[in-house]
Length: 110
Image (cartoon, rainbow, N blue to C red; front, side, top):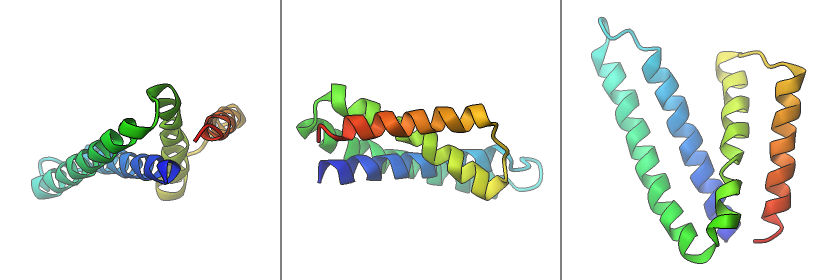
């Protein structure tokens, strides 16, 4: 259950980051409502993620839980590749795989 909560926090944080990217790409002069919508959605997702994170920290030592949030780097990188077709070098993908390996090692303690 702890692992599921940590994964949910990571997914919510990732979604919030993607909303921030959308807000950053909005043309403020033409569409202020769109900008405000993306920022508000990002804040909502971050707020829910924070509340769930507090629940995680009640039962999981921070030395184990916090490194698991590095999964966000992987999720955001994959989402950016799928949504905005961003390119990644082999070195970036190797770094991402190293993060996944670290998360898998840390996840063994849950």
